Length: 318
Image 1 (cartoon, rainbow, N blue to C red):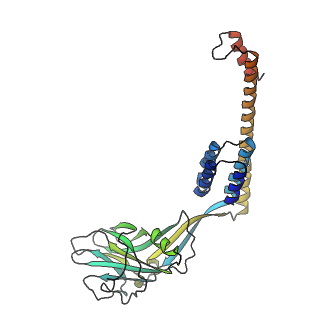
Image 2: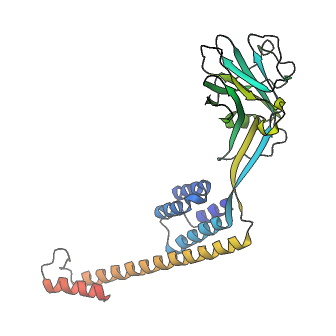
Image 3: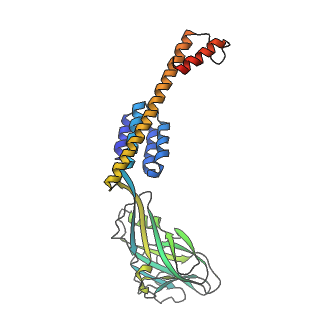
């Protein structure tokens, strides 16, 4: 529908700058409707009829549409951690994921998610978050999330030794300071997951790695719940969310909005019409008076009677 309206505006002779403003208004959403409409009208150099048409199109379009929030959650498919001081040990069945960076321990958490069942449409409002529940933290850690390109590992056999040839991103997409027990923490992974899903050959799995971005002196660590602690409400997860404009499913709500829009549009058109008529009448009167009195200028005329007559006739609409 947006493209059809743009085509209509182009047919009316709207310049490119105004079209750009209108397009940005559509993308901004309903909460910017009023300010955006005024911005469009302020930049337009259209006649009265075209301006009225733009108002009707904009207000009616946004009255029929509502902004819907779409959320999809994907639970972890496989999770484990690896420990530098236990090179060949696997921890895939532990009820927690250990992350640490200290003189006594270096631990990374690996999480794999299956993306094959995700029905998700990316747009400007898209946001994807990795969520984990912190069970225990002994010292504040700055923990970052990295992307690992290897998706063939198994949580029962993955060790610190076996990840040496894995390819991981050098920089985290986001970092979070973890400092409280029994708390949910979130990392933004929109870039990593979005890139994986929008490739020419989309990936059906993605591996994310949590690792400490700072080092501490003692034997401190962070424990996050893994899927093996048997409580699904605490499973690590990816949360996909975005907003979209949809047709309002409530007919009564739509009718009320259309009625309100009609009143608003009628009021705007009436005010604009009266203003244009008044401006045209005054302009015509002043032009006629100037022709009849070429030596008279209202700002400089010293003829008191002339100036007084001008004001009276202007006031009376003569």
